[in-house]
Image (cartoon, rainbow over the protein chains, first blue to last red):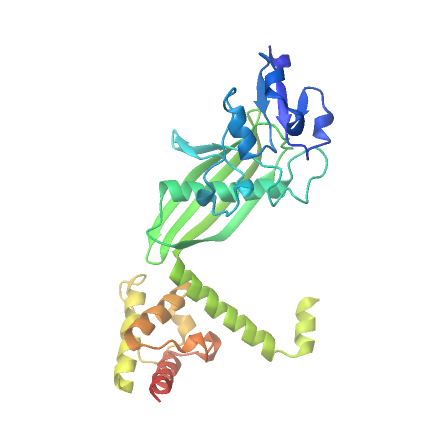
Length: 230
Length: 89
């Protein structure tokens, strides 16, 4: 029966853990659960998920290189796969990740974590489905977001739908829409335009812009700088 | 070492090649064109600098020059002529 399910959640979601039917990850003893069905909520480490996977059907985090992160705990999604033209991945939040580390208010997953999960999703889908020829940089040109309802530390899904893709002389351009759903309801939506540019070219563009900005600041009078800050 | 005339020709050729990617019939360049009127984005300018470094052997924008110093195509040619002269001085 559904009511027998126990939802395991990371300890840092302490207000959510006051709800019946939840258990903190640190208190979980798999051998004491018997036949009870377990649901992996959010806030669990990759190591714990791997342990749970021996007994239950739980998601696993994506390889970190797909998301352009250097630390395992900062990966927020599972590995995306295409289903009927839409790429899908589970939301897999480790409570130690950089966006949750100092920003949990109340019982829900903060919006900033969902934005980063969306960024990881379009990055991973691009790496898997449209791999760049060599070292590249991903550059956001436009990002719109909308948050319709709370996302709680429960299972959730991230979906990526490609709207347009163009291969140009300086790299690839993408337009995509993404949605994060929980219990079958879309909770957050994103519309993004981004480019994948050869690393050498992007670094040169950035270096020229940085020198230009620095030169302007160094040659601008204090009164003008003060005006720009107001 | 390239002569100033060769530097000018090289700059004009590379700019024309870049314009051809987005314009089927780019204008014949005189040198008086302002860079922003040619429709070169910051990314295309970065590509121009990379390609000119490969062709001429110097990148004046790496140390001495910022892009706002260059208004016209003639200015760009001058920057490369000076950069090349400085590199061999």
